[in-house]
Length: 197
Image 1 (cartoon, rainbow, N blue to C red):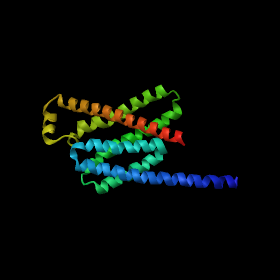
Image 2: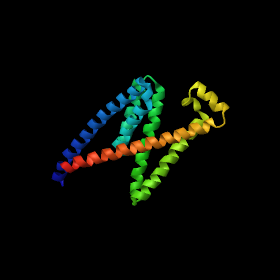
Image 3: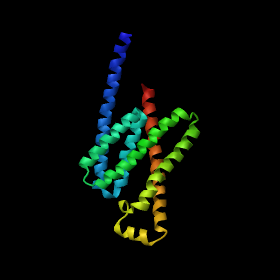
Image 4: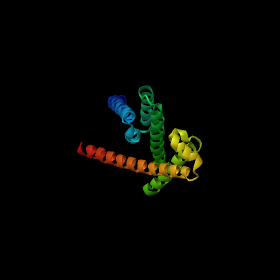
């Protein structure tokens, strides 16, 4: 028993060391993407989405705890290094959503054995979580997303709020599909690498 413990200990330590090194590199890449999103303002959402995708990939590869560590580390780095604090909020929303989505999928894997049913339940849950967070913010705090001229339309035109909500839902669908594509591509590459060993 003692010998087996000794044999497994170094393997676990090496794996944990690799994971920490990988998380450190990914945190640096994520922070660079977030700062680029501030410097190249036309691509803010694109770079923030890429940084948020990294959190989800870490949950898939290393588990929910590692994803939480990366999320907290990147949020702190973004807060300290990013001059535009609105982009910090945007990252918190996008990466937090991705973290919760992957964490809830891990729970569904244990309780729903049928993959098709599990994916459908997960899609509905993701949509409901997004809507529950996005719609109240648009209704009660439109200044977080809209410029001054858009806010005037928001309060004076009846249909404007519904357009903003619809645009947000379309944006969510695009974001979700892009993340699923990135996740599927990553898993395919990762499985190929394992197959070669």
